Length: 293
Image (cartoon, rainbow, N blue to C red):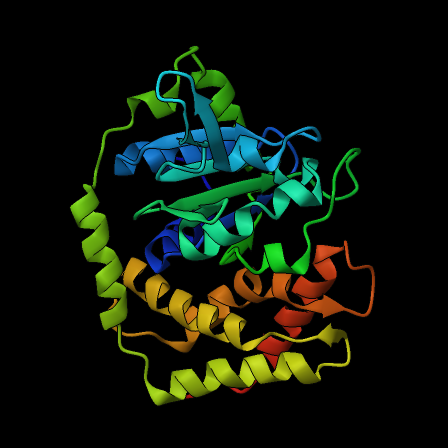
């Protein structure tokens, strides 16, 4: 899907199998949209893309009740979130009011409108993209919204040789359109159930918990990882082991996921918009923590 970005694809699939969502933060034009489209195409998921702008309203995301002249009654018209894979493009270009419209649906897979609850069903997977916060016209995501994302990652520029090959091979065709479906919905559901069966020994659980506790005591962090963050990391560790074709988790899984799962859930003593500070703090804690043998 993204040549030379196997780690990015692996983390996205890990989040999908774990039942979580993905936030991709990067500059425009490095493949964020391609990643979402390719995941939907290869898994046969219904796909919707919603461009977030400053004038977008919650009803434009969730839907709402509209008057039907034929019946003289109001009926619910589903919004773009009623799909299986939603690409929330440039999510931080919309206002906090509209951002918060996603809180319930990302956490509970349902939409509540005027006292009525509408279920989305499974699977429901959000890939949200956002531009760096120093870009013009962006609204930083609040902690409650960031916490809805299992992993936050960046794609980055391709290696020079990979980019050169892309320039040589470009022929105007859409590579995503040529992707074949490799899984059915039954396969995906089976894989998600298999995540529950991945074995996590007490030593690995203890190592994971020690890392979470360390975030709460680190002098460079003013807000450590919550219990929800610990549970999210444990679930992601199971899924990551499965993606690696293992039936058991190891400390390597914890180390691979510590930054993408925890960094956006903690707060540093420095600039809160500088994500590199939180990532560096988590990375240092991982390096300092004794690894079980």
